[in-house]
Image 1 (cartoon, rainbow, N blue to C red):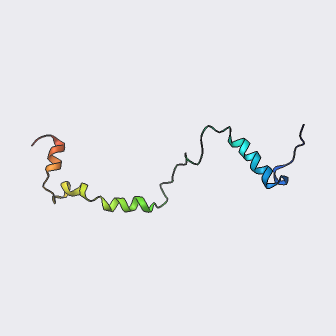
Image 2: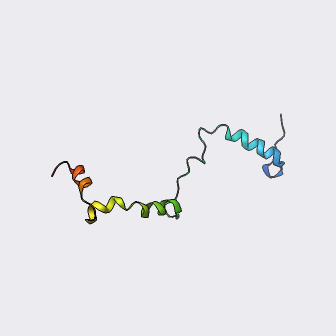
Image 3: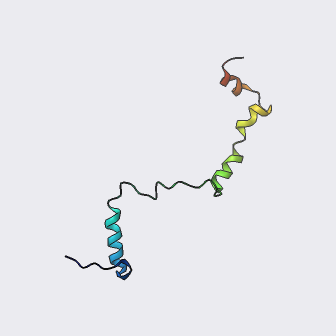
Length: 75
């Protein structure tokens, strides 16, 4: 039977091996399941909001309204 050694006293290599053994029992990778906070500024998301102005053209009266009419069915 191996003698118990506290984690802080283990070598870096031994700690890595111990962590690897514990990780093999996980069913999924917790890194891929991370939920992003809505409070954090996302540069990519902010750029897409302003690029997609074409969707508002039917509501603002700048377009011919054909897309809006097609969506409703018939006029």
